[in-house]
Image (tube, rainbow, N blue to C red; front, side, top):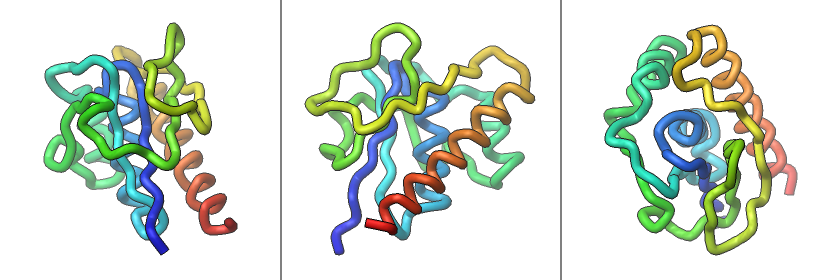
Length: 133
């Protein structure tokens, strides 16, 4: 069975979508391939996200990931918006889900950890849903 490609999309591809890509690879690589992308590029991944992912999961997301544009990743089978607050980026298909997550950039570690925990929960839910098909 060919694994589906899941794209986690937000505007800057520097925080939530990067966390989702890393947790998708960490928790669900046996079920689907994870990618993240945005419509605009930041020069680096959010440093709080990098630090907390190392602390919580031992994952160095700067080692295996970088900010990417939607055109840099394969066409996804499943596209998930992280929650864009203003306007979600346009991709060549409709979004399958909007996780509607607030951007924790510039906020406390506690607020970051809440968002990371929600992303982990959503990844595990998506994995279960795909396994149940």
